[in-house]
Amino acid sequence: MYYWHWVKNLLAKPLTTGYPTEPDREVRRFAQSGSVARIETQAMGRSSIQRSCAIRQVDAGSCNGCESELSLLVSPIYDFTRYGFSYTPVPKHADLLVVTGVITEPMVAVIKQAYAQMGTPKRVLALGDCAISGGWFKDAPGVLGSLDGVVAVSVSVQGCPPAPPDILRGLLTALDGEVPRAVGEGDRD
Image 1 (cartoon, one colour):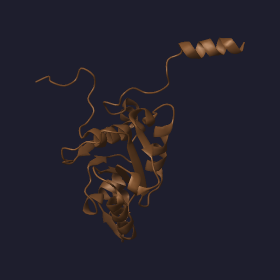
Image 2: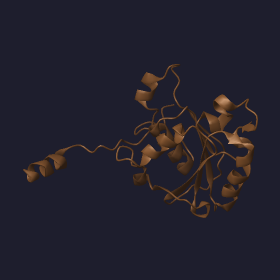
Image 3: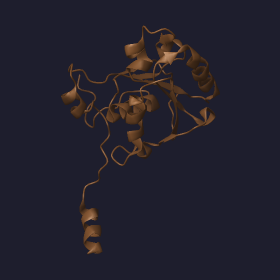
Image 4: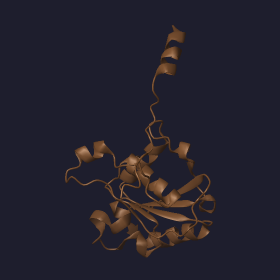
């Protein structure tokens, strides 16, 4: 009986998703306004990260929506370790700083300190509407609004919260310096 399950598991397709080259279709289907997550990049320079990428995540004060979606990336479905990503608790070991939540005045020093401790090349990913523009709380007292006013943001992933495939596309964009393209997509001019 045990061997039958073993053979069945060998013949089954893997549960992991493919390379995330486009926005998640399920999120697009359920989006109320018809909008999907956009990934915006800034000028990152010529040096790309040519090794495994250690991520330091800083929660600047959020509802934990972005963190829950970010934690799904280590699940067997998305398995971001196959692309060389891992989390690190120490900014000195990090290549990529992921900031979620509303940027408030007390968190500016923490974010700047984490950014200053990182080695080069370093990237910053603003995850979610709160980190990009302040989201629902942009007019609240003590809220600065955009992360871009604190440190230089390399990649922004919009959404409230963004879906895990869109976050993974943003991480790959920060790693490579360009938005991932589908196989066969490219020079269609």
